[in-house]
Length: 150
Image (tube, rainbow, N blue to C red):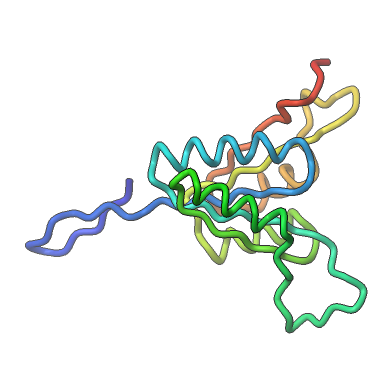
């Protein structure tokens, strides 16, 4: 853990922050499990982020509206005694997640992958691949637990 010290003061550990990228896919279940396990182990604060396309009648000045499913997930984390909050963003997932990670400066970003096709074992999904190239912090890519082996 990071610690800050001032002359004559004890070191105080700073709380860790995990940004967990979620969507409505099966891959998100594995991301949520990993985020909960790490948050419990390191007493980390989890920021659940869902990125979606903006609605047709969207005012860019208005923040995205939190979906009931995302709010419920945040509540379930709290019921487990874990610190969590949820954020809904509009736009392209990879870009929005990288920008949010740049603003929040989390200790870790967790993202799932749904890579498909013959080379799925060698390729990451589009969002995970974008974050690998653009995120300014460590990235944990969690494979889809419900995916069938090749």
